[in-house]
Structures are given as structure tokens and as C-alpha cells.
Image (cartoon, rainbow over all chains, first blue to last red):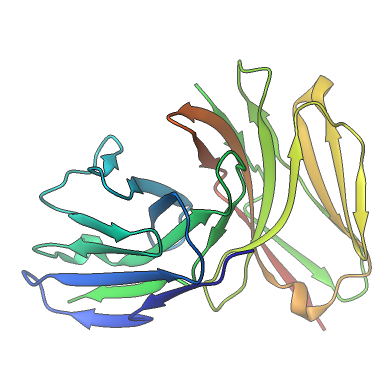
Length: 115
Length: 117
């Protein structure tokens, strides 16, 4: 399976600021996904990021709040903009290992605390 | 709409006991995939197993076993002779084709397993 890394692993941020989270994969993948896991909760899909096209956002998530970049087949970023304490969560990226294979593998996550 | 229910929020067992984590799913699709993931305190989500809707054969991997029953829409996970390292949150997930070559995962709320030495 693909090896996925995320930066930063954790951060503490002030209200009103923005944080960009990086996701790097050791092989080329078509689909990359960004999830949010609020404290004690399950995972919720934020958006799907394909290389060369705009990210597709799920209901309740908007591009202005969570802009995503996907410049190539091994890298993506998620920005959490104008943060509030409600944005405190673990943010995880995942990839489908191969086209048409539905298993998603996850990165180690970024623990974000907003004060 | 698809849904995954993990009715057990938290379970505590004493080391070496067997424990079963329940998962019930809902979907109208005939083709789907079921997953179990483990999330230890470090936060990383670890893939454990994938099962497609046409394969009801149960699977065993070491101390782990999975029981898939389409008749009851259940995909239960049993850990035999539990160990402290099994302490984690376990998520059951359902995957459906969402179009454009992509599958979408729907997660249950997770079951927190604590194995007491």
C-alpha cells in the first residue's frame, strides 16, 4: 500500500488565522481525499481532490473555508481558513491505492487545536 | 441513503478475553464493500480488512476474524485472546461507487475498545 505522510503532525493556532496541511504520497495516485474527525467523533469527508481539476466538496464544506490544491499525482494541501475553536479536529488525508480499487489508506493525521 | 451503525460505543475487556465488535449497515446498492479500520491513540487510521458484497466467506487473520452476513446486513469483528495493544477505536465503513471512478466511504461512529491488563 501507499505510504502517506502529513505535515504538520499537530499544531495549535489562534482564532482567525489559517493553516495549510500537506499530504505527500510515495507513489502516484489518482484520487486523494480529505477528512475531518472532530473530537470523539467519526470521520467526515470534506472533499475529493483529483489532479488537474477542482476539488469536489461534500455538503456542509465550502471552498472558501477549506481550499484544496492538487498540483500533481503525489501531493495535496488542505487549508483551514479563518479558524475558530470549532475547527479543532484531526484532519486526515487518504488515497485510493489504484484506480478502480476502492480501499482507502490514510495518512497519520494532523491534530489541530484552535484557541 | 447509506448508513453504518456501531451500537457499542465503548467496550472494556480483560486481557485474553474474546471480544466481538458489531457493525450493521444499510444500503440499497447490490455492489458495495465493507471495511474495518483501527485507530490507536496515535490517531492514524489503520486498514484491517476489505470485503465485497459478493463474498460472504468469513475471514480469519491471526487473532482477528470477521463474520459477514448479508441476511442481517452485519459485518462483525472478533478479536480472540485480546491484548493491551488491541486498545483502540475501531471503525466499520461502507464503500459505494460515487461516480467518476471513485468510491465513497461512510463510517460508523466507532467502538472504543479498552483491554485491561
